[in-house]
Length: 229
Image 1 (cartoon, rainbow, N blue to C red):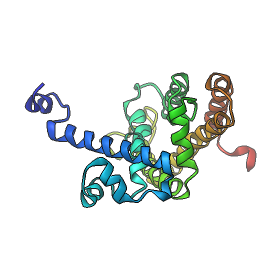
Image 2: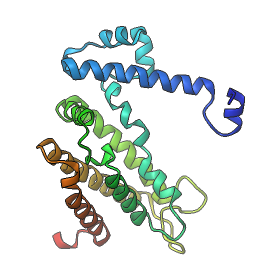
Image 3: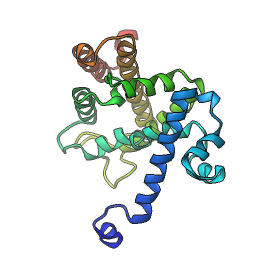
Image 4: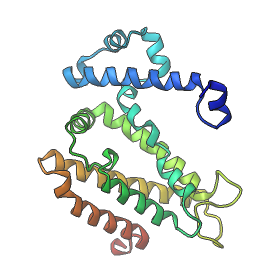
């Protein structure tokens, strides 16, 4: 497919594909260095040299050193929002998000924390063992909250996409509060799964408990915090 054909088909053009390949190559080179030597011990100049680009060029792609690692999460920032927006007409946002998370557990998606691949485990140890990376990850999660809040309130379309048919539109604050709770639930579930696997359990062994925990967590989202009232 030519660049023009890709653009006409709605796909990324040649320039965008080259840009994405650059992001991927630089990020992978950086992560390899960080895993081998430790995040704090590798200067950005060394990453640039390994990727065969200049330091200013590197910072054009990655505003911070932490973004070199968290680039792997970039495609997931608006994932929850996409799930809500693309859900079937008769499916509620929570049902769609719960189904999506359970599907991720089924295929052992690293984002769910339920993945015992040695390379994924090494990456997660790097991530959760580096305070500055954890802090930067929270910024990514805040962006996820904003995107999901917009989807729930219908801010991205003419009709409210985040509410049941016939229901009134959701105000922005209520949508953001709901989005914050949903993203927090997904984060806590993933972190608990990762902690158990990091302690030596296999993904297959953790899977039944992970499914039960996800169903319980989404059930609590539906019922609210009545137990603690």
